[in-house]
Length: 180
Image (cartoon, rainbow, N blue to C red):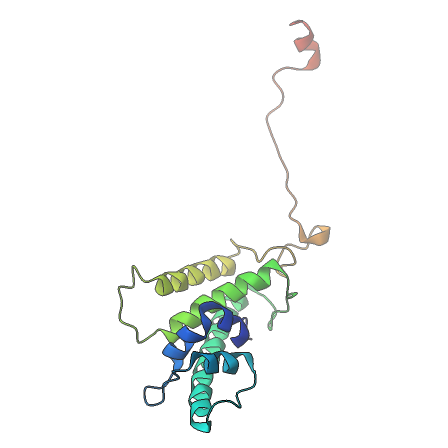
């Protein structure tokens, strides 16, 4: 399942970064407006067939990275016992969290050939953070928020029952009256 769309990726990290990362070496997409139109599914009649073909190749690479990120996320969700494909309302906290993780994973997959210090690279850091949070989700230590289908169902609304136990009171009302 795709947890992020090419339109969302056009917003952030943006068409410029995606064009640079996903273009074939032989056919780079140098017109970032074309890449933006391609990612958003807009009219591309102002560009030549060769330019749109290069943008289509870059789009295919972005879509492959999105699919790979979705499969990775689904693997973690399956470990937790979610029914796949996961259906969350578009405005839910869980959907936005999954979209952020999918964005981080997709960017990392597109950056595979980049040479950098993994410890200082923000793309690698975001990827590691997404995998860490997915691991916590799979272990049941993290929730997708309100509407999480894996939330405990023992209480209406999926809320968890909380109980407090304490030692018996040392003082009661009658003992405290003498301190007037």
